[in-house]
Image (cartoon, rainbow, N blue to C red; front, side, top):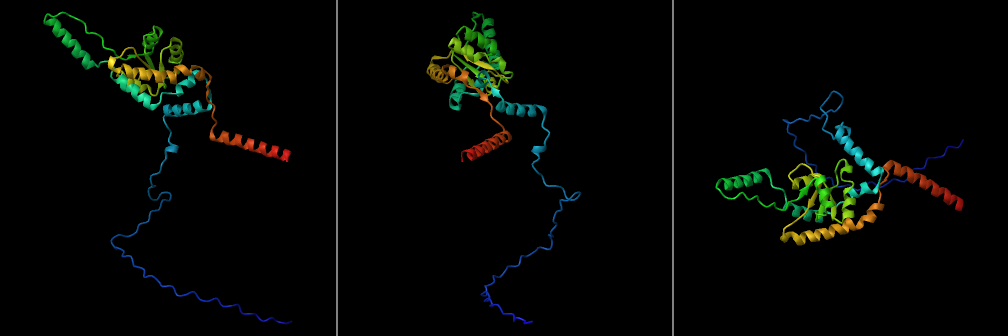
Length: 266
């Protein structure tokens, strides 16, 4: 048997000598020694983590969130869906700026007015009742009466009234009677105008001559956004959007169908 000689491989050239950087030795203070933490079971206290996903939220919060999800999933009929289309921010700011001028008097102002009237009566002057200043009218019953009598110049409705059936008829009534109306965000914001926690509806019946032009501009804008869009609002349904899982499932089925169709055509 012939033994083959092993051939020597070519030697690889050695790497050139790299200039080594002088590493600075870190001075360690002997007074401070390392104490690495051990986060095992029964060892060091665990670091704080965001556990909001695992919180058992109060029932009213869970209901709020479930309601919000349902309102995006279920199909919402036009009379209810119109309350999701609110006045834009710029117009709403102008509206509330105007209504703030006509807030009802507070308890202190009323007390002062009655005291002055009583003092005048005691002094022997005639008891003349003070003329009622133009103020914002509030409450669903009051506003409905004003709309029916066509005394309201502008009606403001909150979009988050619960139950919504309380104000569901009002937009249709305003359109029928030809009264300008608008839907704004937040019943608490309406409540602040009339010195209450919340308020469903407000109505402006009269304003001073200085604010007449501002009111007219608001009425024109509101009519274009709400009153004149009555037929469009009646046809527009809301909701009906799928969740991420359902949307992915539908997309997968559609993709499979498209692939099968392409095979048949090909």
